[in-house]
Amino acid sequence: MPTRTGRPPKISRAEIVTAANRVIEEDGVAALTMRRLAKEVGSTAMALYHHVRDKDELLLLLLDAYAATAPRPELPEEPRERLVAAAVAMHDALSGRPWAVDVLRADDLLSVGALWYPERIVDAAVRAGLTTEEAVDAYRIIWHYTAGEISAAAAARARREEGGTTYRERVFADLDAAEFPRLSEVGARWGELTAHDTYVKGVRALVRGLLP
Amino acid sequence: MPTRTGRPPKISRAEIVTAANRVIEEDGVAALTMRRLAKEVGSTAMALYHHVRDKDELLLLLLDAYAATAPRPELPEEPRERLVAAAVAMHDALSGRPWAVDVLRADDLLSVGALWYPERIVDAAVRAGLTTEEAVDAYRIIWHYTAGEISAAAAARARREEGGTTYRERVFADLDAAEFPRLSEVGARWGELTAHDTYVKGVRALVRGLLP
DNA sequence: ACCTGAACACCGTTCAAGT
DNA sequence: ACCTGAACACCGTTCAAGT
Image 1: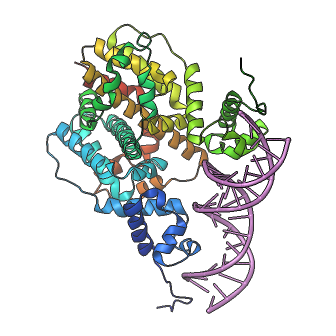
Image 2 (image 1 turned 90 degrees about the horizontal axis):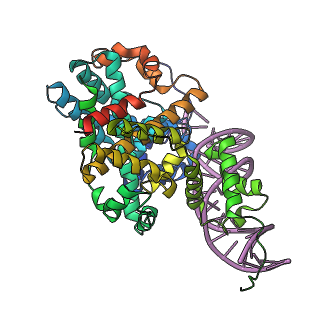
Image 3 (image 1 turned 120 degrees about the vertical axis):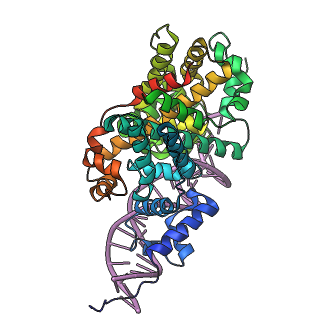
């Protein structure tokens, strides 16, 4: 057993990840800077680079740590319902964490821990009668929809919190009814009409449209 | 006619927008900083703030300027085909401009100029037999899917340009076949299987699943 | 081996002053 | 009215030096 030499570490990867999670939970992902994180672990920003390559790697570690704890619900046996349930579970796991969607997008497919969801989605699609190739297509389409919905919902939430009239409201207020008959018919009701969640409706439509 | 007083302007909003578009076209949206833009119009960064409120407003102006020139193809009469064609046109208009998707996301619904697309999508959905409310839902679902697909495709392109093995490849290399039977079956073929475009397939599935 | 301080090369934006 | 220079309050990251 070789004696390890050198200065003993003051901080660890695990400690960094825990602190980073705390920062995100308390003040959002925008507050997660290397300097702030260093303060949180009682060190300097530069010390962090001894434990993680860069900020991107840190975000990937964060995602992995979260994925390991994400809920993995029991799924129904019937293939279509199983697919819908797996997609909804994936959506729910990420919906409060749009930063995680950005991390996933940056390197395609989920982290190791998050593979639970695509595995079940592809599996359900095959059980429903698709070839492997078609099932992978179906997964990707569902993933794009899911990622898009989560990003949009997060943006809508941020907009609501900021308050004030949105650009959209001003545009709708003086919309030319001749040029945009349908949209001016909807008009002021847009906010109300789009307040409810349509995620599940979309997934069901995709399942209906993609499976034989 | 009142004589306007004060120093005559050296730069105009239109000039700024044109220069900003040139920067984005040449070096991407990441290169569009207030300082760089100022250099491009032969002025200082601070002078720009006399013509646009902030960078967000500038991006919105940019989007409006682009939307006014975006292609508006002839659409087929048959409602389902019309809906698909309108969605594809929207996708094509934005697919090389993921920054525009981010701008649109930030304030829900498109800029005035870009309303051409949702107007036609909602209209086609109503013609196909949906109520106005259902048609708005359908539009939103299609928009989320479209936005998600464009962001993912842009990320994939960036990854390809950077080169090197991706995190995904490393994860797939040592995947536990017992835990992930379907994904390890696909395994190394993931890259090949996901190389083709699935946007239209997804839109068709949505149309099939959403319309009566 | 691990940590630190200073510095680099950036951001968007504000403010007070000039013309 | 419009523009400028200096400055503020940040970023992620590198580098040389310390223990």
